[in-house]
Amino acid sequence: MAQRIEAKRRVRLNRERVLEAAVSLADQVGIGPLSMRRLAQELHVVPMALYKHVANKEELLDGMVETIVGEIDPAVPDTDWKNAVRLRVLSARRMLQRHQWARQVLETRTNQSPAVLGYMNSFIGMFLAGGFSADLAHHVMHAIGSRMWGFTQELFTTPADPAAEVPPEVRPEVREALFKEMAARYPNVVTLAMAAQHDDGSVVGHGCDDQFEFEFALDLLLDGFERLHQQRWSSQQARLDRVQDPRR
Image 1 (cartoon, rainbow, N blue to C red):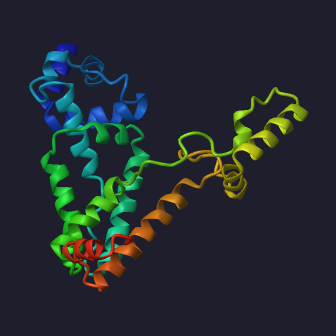
Image 2 (cartoon, one colour):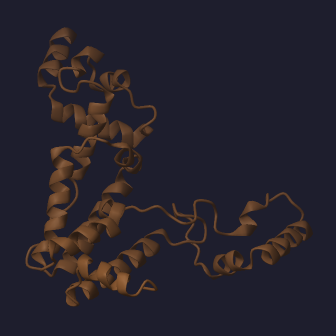
Image 3 (cartoon, rainbow, N blue to C red):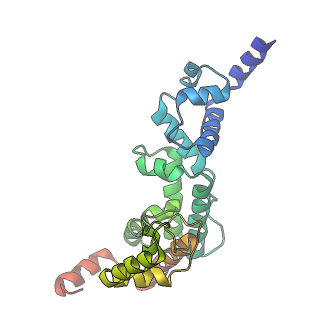
């Protein structure tokens, strides 16, 4: 009886099920512990059964990216380009928040799968449909960079609060002295740290509101893109202006 059940499980195994199981497993254990052997155990099959659907772990990771990219909402129809782009980016960010391992995998992919190329194509299409020239859209994509996937390289890779660097068991008077020393050496860093609103769940750094900082930068970029679009900006003219006035 057990053998018949196992046989049925193997018959139902396909690439989609393998990838969905891999995504689910990575959500639970992270990308590091994910292996073909562990995935096979999760699916109740022998490891060799997986190789009929994915050639190796790299192909598995490529397929997992395809799966999660499919979770990003499509472009909202009948809306202006600026709002369409903003909603799309924030949808991508929600996808990354569901799959904490995804950023690491996206950053290491060298193969542009059809799903990734399709997403990039539709993302560029939102600007072109909004009347952007191909020239401006090209530079826009460079500027927006990884934000199209919902993340960006953050300035504060360590806690933004200098006092947080001091071990809590240090006596209060010693902590105060160390903090004063840091304030004297790095006054601007301390000024920003003290001005920040705290968000304990932030992945940017203690003292920063992760979501707010992301949307703040995104909105700055979108406002800038809109201004250039309205000015009928072109890279050719911008380069010519720079030659004529090197101070630009």
